[in-house]
Length: 296
Length: 223
Figure (tube, rainbow over the protein chains, first blue to last red):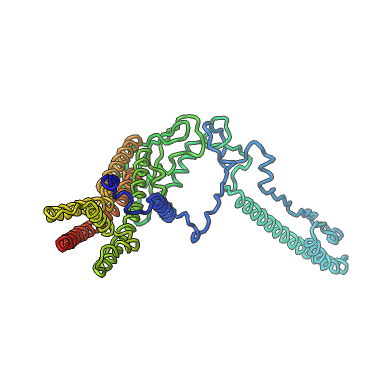
């Protein structure tokens, strides 16, 4: 009976389900939710495209650019020659000058044009002149006719020569224009000028880091046209990068007075928090943002 | 997801703590839902069974079918105490009435004890839900304040206070408050729901105890 008096009760009333596996279930549910909201289940989304990297081998930003032009040929002319189309050398058709006016004998063989067209026209003129020369060789009337025929033939030859020159010039201009469009350079620029900057004085091939940065910031800048109230806005910003190319400071030297434009400039600068190249020195650039230039 | 990954280490730690709170809270919600649902269902069925049968021994044999109900525990405790008293009962005509009163008191104590145990079982883990509901928003707020402090330090270094500079840092910091609220809201809703259910079941247990004691006293009086 003593067992009944001191028996502990209530310890085995229920067998509640274990909470361990429920915690595991909850954890799995949370992970699934996180994956769903982070978009990892990308069945509906197309797979991300592989990034395409463009390496600009002729526009490397350097600290000490040498003189030249930024889009010019580098010191390795062979490599550049391969990439640029060879200039088309088309010599204009050489038409030998006709002999000075001589009597009818020379009129029979007035000239020796190299091209077929000239030959044809010349022979036609000669053929026209030949019967006249035969029939009027003895009389003065015949000599006068002969002179007229010869002049007609010569004027025809001259006309043909001018036409050919014009056609050759047109062809040359077309060839130049096509070569410019391929290289992206301005026609007439000194293609043999060394790679560098127009105001460069250094010894490194490439463009100035400051110019490169300015171009990049201009590229970064964007503003909706609906936010533009005035187009005559301009601001100057001093931007500082450390030697590792990390943005360390920016200071508005002159604000535009328009907060929207200033904010857009700030966004453009913050897009380039880290430069793609290593300057190797502290880089401090003062950049002028002109809204009109940027919009154009 | 980027907001979390770009946040500072303190904010990340806060988010981790809140994630733990959320995971455990939801586990408790699932667990309590299952336990209380079964208890409510089996209690209703057991009451029908109890009032249909007239004999305690018959009822005791059918308890296995309602094992998730707290009322079955009460009945078993009361019935076992009754059996124990009757076996210990010394038949003495002079003290019979006093002995019967003592028996019903013993049964009453056993029922109260069983009620307390069952209430504790049903309320188990609910304190964690209450803690999550009350502290998770504050933990998230702490992460946000820390993140904003960090963000302002960065603003001071760059020297710009425009919206483009301030907004990303604040956005990263606010994610902590958002996660805190996400953890707290279900916990508060779950806590209130389950406390209400437990109160209903406790009321049922109290009523059943009173009915059981009345039956026991009537039986003892009849001898």
